Amino acid sequence: MKKLLSTFIGIIAVILFTSIIQTETQAADVENITINSPINLSYKSKQEIYNIRKSYVEKSIFAKPDYEPSEEVFGGIVDNKPWISMDWSFAYDYNNPENYVIETNGPSSHSRSLINPSLPVFIDYPFAIPRVPEYVSEYSIMPLLMVPVKAVYYKPQKEVDITYKKLITPKGEGGYQINAINARDMGYNYIFVDKNKSTYNIKYISNDNLSTSIKELTDFIHLGGSCKVSGGCNNWSITREDLQFRPVEEVNNTKSEQNNNQAVKQNNYTLQSHSLSINGSSSSSYTQNSAAPTSSGPCIFIKLWKEKPSSPYNEADLNVKLIFE
Image (cartoon, rainbow, N blue to C red; front, side, top):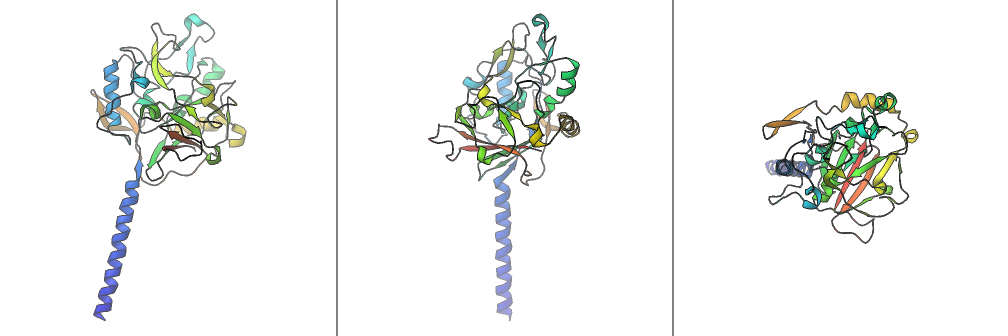
């Protein structure tokens, strides 16, 4: 009897030990990504910005001891210039070119990617919007919709899940664009949207788009004149119709006003703070405390490669799922 009991206890111990090991392994396979809120980059030197970038990469899923910002991506940054702000969409006196200026004060729009290197792709709205009542009321929440609400890295699947609030449908012909500046900096050069795995209802701006063929990434930062500020601003480029899309609102069954109200309550990018300090200043962030997988929702499934594959349906070097809730 004692021998039987001893054997039984031994079996239970093995089961418990195996369960603990599996749980620890599973936890190690899932990494929550802290989403750092936009910071002001205006009038900083190129070296300061490089130092900021390296500090965040050091704490990212792409961390490596010899990392240096890609000159192809970031080499066009010019010292002590303004950057387009999170209110980039609104253009003052849109119909008068002499007075047409995009906002450059406050948190910089493209700091979203620069200080969030773990997020390979972002959603951008690369069009200026006239600062007139009917547009301002409709688009006032746009900057907040451009900041993800959570992200998780699933190592075995080589997949980063990034969750946004549902997007509003833009007026006119403009659309959102996939910004893959982080992916390109980390050595990923080709992108494709797998429609078979995507469930978010969108319409592409161009018939030749990233769901019809593999596209080469060309994102970079340069000194551009789109802000209309004398001397130019550091900003992201390049605007490409083949990477642009529009959500199909009637299929998503969501009204723009409802999206705006939800985003105001849930996606304020100044709500929380963390301890990372760069040159004496700290930035805000959303911090995910649970290692649970992100909830399923409508998504755009993106595949990234370092070398161009023979087929868009080849296994990707890295997958990115943009989830909308």
